[in-house]
Image (cartoon, rainbow, N blue to C red; front, side):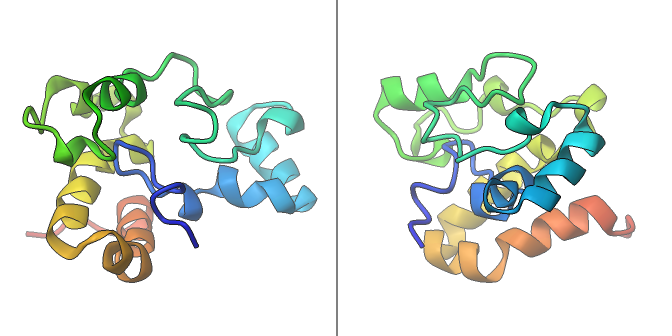
Amino acid sequence: MDYTRLTAPCGLPCFACYLFLAQDDPQMRYLVSQEVGLPPEKAACPGCRALKGQPGHLPMTCRLYPCAEAKGVQFCSDCDEFPCDNLHPYCDQAKMWHNTKVFHLCLIKKMGLTAWAEHKAKSVLETYSFGKFSL
């Protein structure tokens, strides 16, 4: 699997996203469509890089993809300005995986892309989505 192509510059793992997985599974696409309130044709995504940072399911334009492209970096964590306010999490998006971007980027930098993708990316999303807070 090409983890560079299937990981957004912001560190989100497209390969583990239900919108990416729904591309080849019509039943999953239907379920995703119902869950996120999109028509079935928009309830699948080939990944951020394939769409140059403009996936149809997002309600706004992504600021991160064009920034990374302009700075010539594969991932935001490769940038001298990392972390920046473009990566700031937002309370109104607390249910969205977008709040895990900085954590993913730190793990990619620490572990390397392949090790992160194969051993950590999915568990981060599962923990964020279903885990219980503890100190």
